[in-house]
Structures are given as C-alpha cells and as structure tokens.
Amino acid sequence: MNGAESLVRTLVAGGVEVCFANPGTSEMHFVAALDRVQGMRCVLGLFEGVVTGAADGYFRMKGTPASTLLHLGPGLANGLANLHNAKKANSGIVNIVGQHATYHIEYNAPLTSDIEGLARPMSAWVRTSPDAKSVAADGAAAIAAAKSEVLRGGEQALLLLTGSALTERGLALAAQIAGKTGCKVMGQTYNPRMARGRGRFSIDRIPYVIEQALPILKGFRHIILVETNDPVAFFAYPNKPSLLKPEGCEVHRMTSGGENSVAALEALASAVGAKPQDAKPQALVEIAKPTGALTHASIAQALAMAIPENAIVVDESITTGRGFFPPTAAAAPHDWLQNMGGSIGFSTPVATGAAVACPDRKVICLVGDGSAMYTLQSLWTQAREGLNVTTIVFANRIYQILRGEFDGVGAGEPGQRALDMLKIDRPAIDWVSLAKGMGVPGRAVSNADDFNKALAEAIAEQGPRLIEVQM
Ligand SMILES: Cc1ncc(C[n+]2csc(CCOP(=O)(O)OP(=O)(O)O)c2C)c(N)n1
Ligand SMILES: [Mg+2]
Image 1 (cartoon, rainbow, N blue to C red):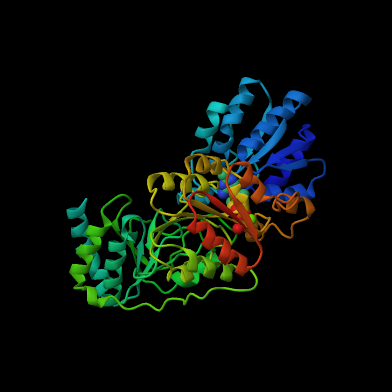
Image 2: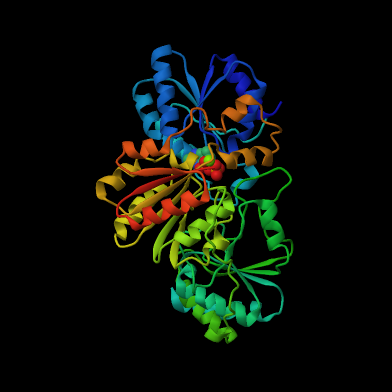
C-alpha cells in the first residue's frame, strides 16, 4: 500500500466519506487510490473555489467534515477564499494538497511554491508529509563575449531563449548567430510572449513530454541560457530525470530573467562576427485550408490560415495544441502568450486583459475545455467591455493531459472512479449556451470546413465570440 492509499483508508476510517476534488499530476496516486478503497464518494469540481465551498456547505448541513483534493500551491490558492469563509463558519474540512516529490522541490519547477505558507492563514492545522511513511546591457555584453567562445568551439551548442530574447529583434539576432556558428536555437517549454509568424525567425520549444525532450537535448555539449534556467521536467516521474540536459553538458548563463537580452544577443552576434546575411532561410510548413475531420493537425492548419496580422494568441490549448507551433510559424505575424506557472484558468482572463491593453489588435484565446471552466466569467467582462476576443474551446470532454499523467506516474490502468475524476463528459458542457448566457455569441463546429468559416466570421466581426470545437 502506498502513502496515498493509506491516507484514503485513514480518512474513510475516520468518518470522512466525501472528497471534493480537482487533482493534478502530484495527486494522481490519491486519484488512483480511490479505485482501491471502498467508502469514499468522490465529487469533481472544475474550480478549486467550487471544491472548497462545497466542502463548507457539506459540513454545515451534515456536521462531519469532507475532504478536498487540491493541486499544489496554486490549486490551494484558488480555493482559499472559500476556505476563509469556511473557517469563519467553523466548518471542519480536511484539505489534501499534493506536493512535488521531495527530490524535485530543489529544482524550482514551475508549480513549486510555499504550500504551508499559503495554507496557514486559512487553516487550523497544517502539516507536510515528507515521505510515504509519514505521509543591464554593459554587463551583459561582457558576459556575451565570453559565451562566444563556447559557440566558436565547434561542439554542438544550444542557445536557449525566453523573455526579451523572443522579441522580433532578439529572434533576428539569434537567427544570425545560428547561421554563423551552426548552433541550434530553441525556446523554453512555455514563454511569456513570443514574436512569431511569416518573416520572423521560427524556433521550436523544448517539449513538455520528457520522452520527447530528452532525445532533442541529447546531442548538446553546451547550453547557453538567455533569461531561462537549466531545463527541468514539470513533474517528477518514476525512472525519469528531473534535469533534462544530457550528462556532461555544460550550462552557461548569458542573461537572467528581466535583463536586456537583446543587447546581450547584439554583443554575442558581434563577438562571433554574425551579420544579417548569415541568417539562413527557413523551410516553413505550407498552409493549406483544411477540410474534412477536425484533428489536431487540421485545427492547426485552420488557425494558421485565420490568424490575422498583429493578432495576440493566448495559448492554454494543453494537449490539443502541442503541435500548433510548426504550422502557425507561417501565419501572419503575431504574438503568442503562454502560461508560466502551470496553474490552469489562465487564458481567458489574460486574453481579456490583453484586449483591454491593445484594443486595435485581435485576441485569439485557445483553451482546453477543462481549463476554460475555471475562469469562464471572463466572457462576461469581454461582452460588457466589447473586447475583440475570439475564444476557441477545444471540447474533447476530458482532462486529456491527466489521462497521460496517470500513465506517466505509473498509476496503472484507471478504473471507473479514477476515470470519473478525469472525464468531464457527464453531463456534456454546452459552450454555446454558456457563452450566450454571458452575452457572447457562439457557434459549435465539428468539421474543418465549418471551423474555417466560424473563424473567418469571428475574426471579421467586432466584439467577443466563442467557437466550440467538438472533437
Ligand atoms: C489550478 C490548477 N488545478 C488543477 C491543475 C491540474 N490540471 C492540469 S491540466 C488539467 C486539465 C486540463 O484539461 P483541458 O483544459 O481540457 O485540456 P486537455 O488536457 O483536455 O487538452 C488539470 C486539471 C492545474 N494545473 N492547475
Ligand atoms: Mg479537455
């Protein structure tokens, strides 16, 4: 019996018979344990504020506590407001918050945070179970000159970018440096903002999936970090590394977060003698209007066709969008924004704020159906303010990524109760009605031709629109 299973058994034995849950990777063993232990009723909430509020209401009516299952610090933080209400009401709740594997914490992966510090103000009692048994430009220039030695050494080198390096100018300089020295240029897995599209240097990102990232990084002897960090896995998985660089690879820092990486790249280009004509032409995926079934590939093609010049793309497409980058590299020039902290419910508010900031630009919000349910109230603000946001919901009716994580952590084959914590098909969510209820016109599509049309219409019109992509 693992720690998660003994915890579920202890809860049931102690009279805690209901678990309001919104799990993530770090809670997969608890989810798996639900299949093996009788007596715990599991209720999935699509936002942690729902999860914690439901537990409060349960205690008020029943007089015995329910448990909650929350994903690391951000999941807990989403639920804190209703835990505050519950504390004021003297409602008993047993909150279970996942933590990274102890050996993964020191790497400061995106979801690492001070969970006890977040929990304490809203809690009567907090404990962490540590194991299964106890359940500026001048400076940058100088550094850049030093880094140029690495690129001139003739060994396979990766220039790994994020932050200000991903502006149009930063990328153009990286293209020159790559053309001159033969180094490879990539972005980190997720980036705050990247200039993309026709005429701009197109780069790949380190894949989220470790099995895909490792072979890509395997051949490098040197990694030069530009505002980023030594690449780490999002989560810890059995028999897979936390650090992704290959053995013997040397890591060299050029700039840290917030520094002027354009100046540093200018200095690096000049140190290696790279000129604009050194940038090599890139072969881009050809855009063709897709037809027939909606697949991840045809969705990407339709987007590449439709993204208008100067658009802002806010990307929380999770598994549907893993292959969106290559086809959209040939789209009209645009900016691409991603979630940096791993806490979902990010894209609809960020798209709203981006539209307020840039009223003359079209905002396209790409969002998984699970993620969209967290902060869908953003649509109401978009309608009230008349914002030019087109929200595209990928309605696969499942937390597809977590289905993969269930396998990834070695939890075995999910049974009905574990699957019930991953699937969101019962009842089916009617996105067009939800949008309509908040004043946003919407349309559902289930083939590529209709998706092309819906995209063209939504982008041509003023104000918010929603497209439900039924997959
Ligand atoms: C605040 C928070 N709660 C829970 C999670 C765990 N989690 C990660 S992805 C995900 C579901 C994403 O589903 P969806 O948006 O439908 O994308 P799909 O996996 O289907 O592509 C969940 C619940 C999280 N990352 N952040
Ligand atoms: Mg989904």
